Length: 435
Image (cartoon, rainbow, N blue to C red; front, side, top):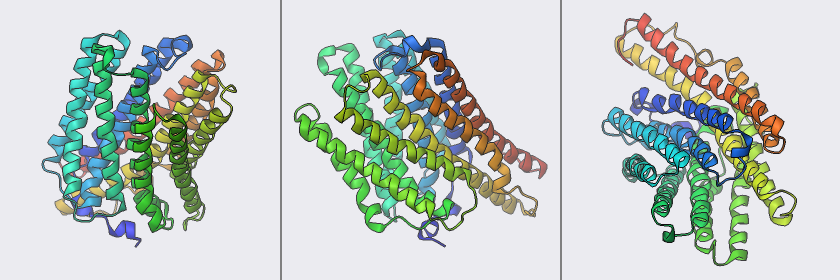
């Protein structure tokens, strides 16, 4: 048993519907984002400041990435931290509902560009994200075992709180443009959201998921201890100097990029030396995500040293695509195809034991979501990422690329839904009520 597995408190796992409601909703928002892009067309996606692009972006970042990460944290808190949430079903339902409504309101606000919609979206998202920060923050504060994953989760939660504050500040600029530079606030909002919230949570979860599920050695203790702190310090200092000391801010941004490059290289090295060398599609999702992380860092460096090589729009779209779709969606997918089958299998065993029934004919984790199902998603997703890189440069590739991405998320949703459907079928066959 590795140290990662030893930290788990599986008897404290919350009801399966707590994380699954978030996991099953996320691909639907991604599908909505793709449909929006197809409806708008390439001309309306020609600038990061276009209303349609901003709506499309937040369907991904709030509706997909944060949706999954909220569900994952609510699931992992009792298991990794050993803190039992009070009334987890009610907490999950309220936060999930507010996040769904708030995301839809914000997308509507961008498309209509009306201040009242921004105010409504800001209020609902403040309740959703602020409530999540308070609930999870209190749980992390009460953590009995403060290991490196707990520290990384605390720092990621801090980054989420800062992202929320910057987002609400941006909402106020729609009411009064003199309250701040929208361009500056957007860049800070983007940095804390993608590099702070998403980046640090991925790092913290990887400390547990990679060794436990992919059968690798542990991350080096010094890297586990210091990498999240270095990232937060660099990100905070960069934020303070972003508009004042440009050259120093550039060096800090370079250091921040190198932090995540080191994480990617170390993770790839662990995975290449993993103890179980059998083919594993979830590891392949990680290979794709980490390759996109390295590509995003290389693209940023290329733009800094040769700014005339790519147009600002093309660079911004490619970087966003590599980070959000290439890194975020790929790594999240790799985690989901391990976490969801494990949760379904675990809860089936627990329910059968509680009912006093024999468990010999329960589906295995590999049967709940087969390697073929997950690999079909991987191929579609990889093809979509590659196609999208050219989709904004050559208009004729725009629609095929987004149709591939639509197919990828449709397959992902069906895979996750099928696992949950099988869970319900097994319980129904055994005569066990509820989920």
